[in-house]
Image 1 (cartoon, rainbow, N blue to C red):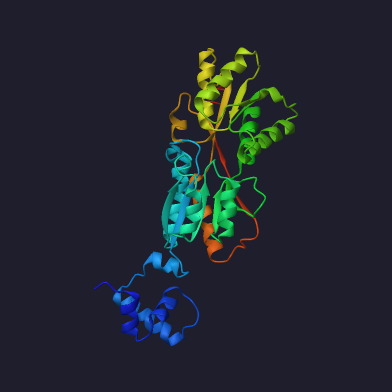
Image 2: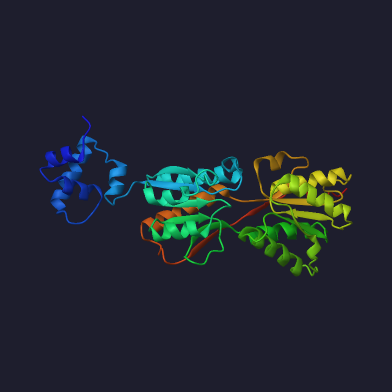
Length: 342
């Protein structure tokens, strides 16, 4: 037999509303009555309908992950699915299920709004390059708790976010190149005017300053976060006569593009020019040469985002206070940066 609120109420000898208040953990029910209803629910194996609970003001025990991406195939990006794995692992331990919302900005301009209106979730984890402040303001005003993966320069509302310590990672990468005796280090950056690229630049510049090096703005090159534009940018820099002996790329794909351009100019990596990437994607360890890179603990990013959201839902964090959590990065040294000595 499939039980309902009505059948549970009949078995317990109480009203349907009383059962609903017990299911949604609401006040106004005597302890003895609550215990009786809970015992009958356990004995019958009754599972409340999640949508009905949501409409009644209770919990759905669903968490939404929404990704606002610029690229059509952003769901295949390595960072997304590794972060998602971390989110899923933590939510499973908290008895929550995960719902995935994919951006449909080209075909449905208001999709982001309906995510907040339908309330099929208790909270959101928001990712992607295409997040607009109006999205988050809307969720905040709807009192839908959310956590962002990646810091944003938004000021209208307090944000709770988890992000990699990009400054520390870029500092470690640049210092490593300096320790290899490299003095003219190119910074091949992704999308300018974003938090993560500005933090990487800050780490790069800090390492140069500490080493007594004068910053050369001409060595900061835009690679558009992709392999082909990065290859073209490095190629153009060499054609223009720019002198450099190392490349720190803001992601591994740009590092691959830089190496491709260097090979086209008959330069060997790392003999002539050392290269370091960022992210430690799966192919980095199998590239030729094997790529030195800064590894982000992407599963930990996801797990930390889920943990922060649980704290919001449990009122352990104030939704009206900003809260940032940084995840440490690790430099993975491989062949592309290290000069071999005989």
